[in-house]
Image 1 (cartoon, rainbow, N blue to C red):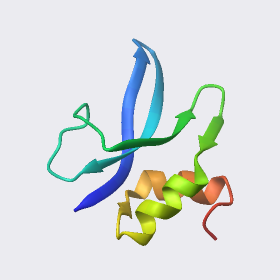
Image 2 (cartoon, rainbow, N blue to C red; image 1 turned 180 degrees about the vertical axis):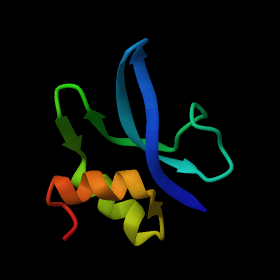
Image 3 (cartoon, rainbow, N blue to C red; image 1 turned 60 degrees about the vertical axis):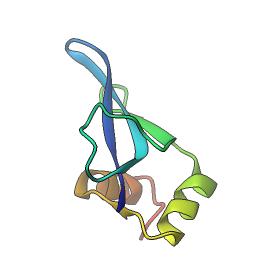
Length: 78
């Protein structure tokens, strides 16, 4: 099963997160299938690759609760 979840990047005390499509059995820093966006909580910036996200959602990927909240905040999912 594939999930859309956050992958931590950046340096200490200055994290940014990539939104990735990744296999459920992989760890947080594991190999992702595809990068579909990023989220910077400090600058409050979000970038979403909408066609890639729609592709994975159509194939049955489930976003985690945090990623779902980011999508709602970006008005991607109502």
